[in-house]
Amino acid sequence: MIRAAVGLVWSAWGGHAALVAGVLMALQVHATYRVPAVVFVTLLPWVGMVIAITTILMLTVNLLPKSPRGRERAREVDLRTAAVLVVVRSLYRVALIGCAAFLLWTAVVFVNGALDRSTDVQQPSEVLSVVVASIDPGFGKLIPHGHVDLRSWESGGGVERVVLPAHERQRTWIGQPVNVTVRAGFLGIPWVAAVNLDEARHLRQVLTASPRALHAMQRLITLAVERQQWTEALELTRRYAAAYPDDVAFVEYVAGYLGVAGRYSDQVELIEGLVARSPDYESLSMLGFALDRSEDHQRAIEVLKRAVELRPEVFVALHYLGEAYQALGRRDEAIAAYEAELRVRPQSLEVRRRVRALRNAAAPAAD
Image (cartoon, rainbow, N blue to C red; front, side):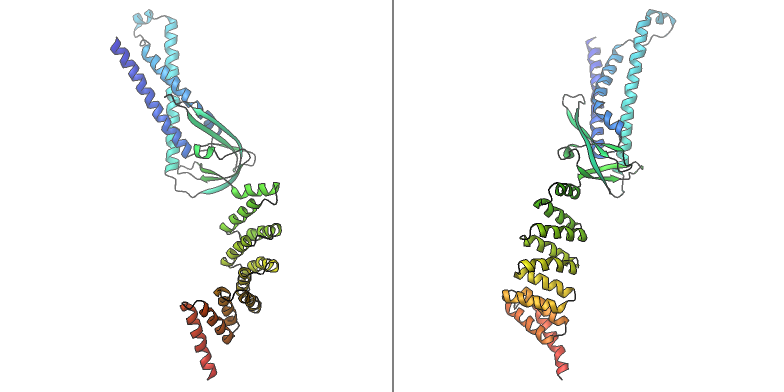
């Protein structure tokens, strides 16, 4: 009798452990490959209760007597006991079917996500609500769980509900503008790979509330530069320079990247404002470079001469000055500028080659 009871409990515990292990793996799958589904995600926290009920029914079914066979034995069991047997076994089957359906859907989600080779698509959205709960899988420890409602990127007024994993839970709030990374899915079922703050939209919200927010403006401009959104970067920097005219270094930072991108006319616009307020060596050198690259060589020469007068011991303006003279075909003045640069940095082989080439070009003309 005791041996049978121990075997029964062990069997029920083994079934319970198998369910718990399966559900734990399933929860990890649904937190990684998130398929938007309002009903499924809402019911997910109840999976722990389903496990507990299934285990109780499993134990109960094993404790109940087997269904009687034959007319004589059937008479021995009253109608109420028979009804209990039917109900309990039916509930047990329903619970098993529910668990099997959950695990089968998990397998579909896993295959759909793990084998997916589609490219990421960024969808703009907004957090409508955040729900934090917990799941008791049946081994004495609660597992944090949450989901988030997002404004649908498929339909204007719809809602997309997805699981919110722990690493996103602490940095998600209601009203937050987000970029949702969506992938097509191996089986054609779209799933969410990530929900991240849309920093640019968030910063614009901050600037709407506080138009002179220094760090928000700087960060938004930096984002525009990093994303090579040059028109936006220029417009934002104009506003920044008007609000903070003394922050020369930041405007020079943006102007430098505009030059790298080949947008020399925009670079000239920004640096001319700096030179008008504070004509230091750095801004004059940068303005001269931008003017030269914009084919305005004569103005470049005038500006670069001012820079050289301020700091003749620095080679940058001298180098740009030589290039501007060379662009206009003024060889002697170009050679003089390059030689002045060589006195500052005699190790420059490139400048020596330029001087030699200019002198060689001048020799046939003299003959």
